[in-house]
Length: 193
Length: 156
Image (cartoon, rainbow over all chains, first blue to last red):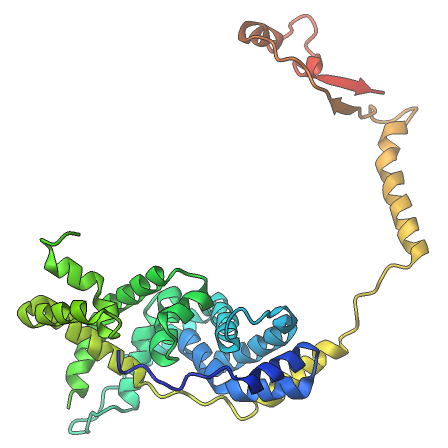
């Protein structure tokens, strides 16, 4: 779909050099890597966990994990795909612990209708509603949806990151759409220009 | 799914269709079906709308101190004391203690609780069903005998 962001990280020779240096324990090289991917990893953790504070903790843990496991990375995939794999798996494993936060967010979103006459374009209220709808998905469907539509990974990259077949990725996305339908259909009417 | 189910075919390829990943000829057929079938057209429009909403979510920036937190976490791991390794004599002493504790019940003599018997399971030829049933029947003459006795060899 054309809405998928195109700002995917490119794996270039410079990055490969950084990764190889970081694999030997070079902290400066690793710093350059995490500074490059910090926002993406944080955003992925945030959208899966549904909570900013938890996402910061998760991102920190993810980069420590990446540093520890980096020597085992064999360049069988792009570094970014491998990084998303570590990030998504870690966030999924921890997401159930943040379910309470997600429910709270959902309730807050429901309880904050816009004031009468307030313009309702794409605003914070809408974003919270969308996040609440995402939180309503199972964590596995949510992870696939986040990686696809928010992080712009291809089906193949998601399959690799989540250790799934491409067909399973597509079917999970389709199921996610079906689950999101009720929550987002109403929102689409609201924000439609 | 077969050619008699155009809606099924359309929905099976819908994700690829919306991603523009279909072969041009297939894509054209899908587009024609989308325009002709109200249900499938509505479904495709809904999925496009959902994708647009999701992709339009702003990417939250990481907290400004996340880098410092990562550095601290990495530093803490490096500074953490390595697990203490057993020195040679301590390992030998511990092993000896474990062995001694394990052997005590086997060599206990004199008064006290009845000595425990270490048993070793040995290979046996399984008898036929009738014999087996007889062997495991209660022994009324010697009620303390275990029906498992024939299957074990005692080491005293």
